Length: 403
Image (cartoon, rainbow, N blue to C red; front, side, top):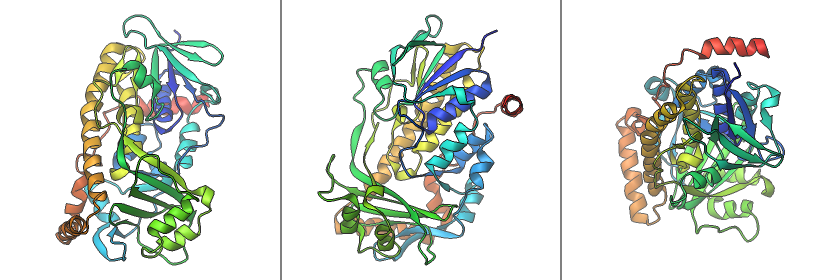
């Protein structure tokens, strides 16, 4: 019998994870990517234990864990360098079964692509959902620049401004501006050792995190009007905003070339969707539940989406039941994380000296009571376990034989 055909729109982390998981599950998969190549936009990504366990299902969890660079102390600081709170990797491992792993997005993309036959991914291909299909009847139709494709299942991984989401839910208001902008850079590690940290100021923060390959992933955020950009360049903007903060921040900014700084305004889907599917079409990742980066869970939740979708969508399953189960599993969890991320972002956006002082004092007091209280923010998030899969190990062996 012919395998059912799944079409994935978008080759980001969620789309590629879904493609790998469905391929292992027994689906024929086609990934459509409008860019000419799979060069990921972005810099670093943090994968928490929940995403690592999700990647275990497709055999990539241990590969990610081997890239862990966070050892020992870390925590939150003030712009002066004074520590607000401290956390160590051992405490995180004990509580959640693993530490956060920082890696370059390109590393994860390359690992996912390596799990797929070369013919699966079609770059330089625009894709438009023409018909979402009906679960028990007509197949979905995706229009590309060369031909229409009929699909048994369409996975929309087309990002925060998802055209597929608009097609499925035209009355939904879509993403809204979260009130701040972000910058991201990757540079060689400074000569002086440092403890991984996030530094919180008045309406701004800076994060400095090591990568296993010897580089540094640094990110910043600040309250700013939507659409605002530096009159000169974004490196100069970082110097103006963060150049007087504690070491190693000034040195990291100095090491960046102006064209290496990525700046993006932050939008989120604070208004939840009524479902993550309609007919034979399903949303994963930012198109379904875009969130602020305050908890570092955006990519992690896209990975969870993909694994849960593949769990429900056996090739011979009733598709209507499978997609309804996927929405029922993912809507409450991701909605809660979107709201929690927004709450943490509001703390970062505080600008008055009094409010910031109270925030820092409370965080410091909690830290003195022990690392467990600091880590409690991630209870119910980082301790997530994927649904039981019986196909993963068997399909892994079959997949490797085919390759």
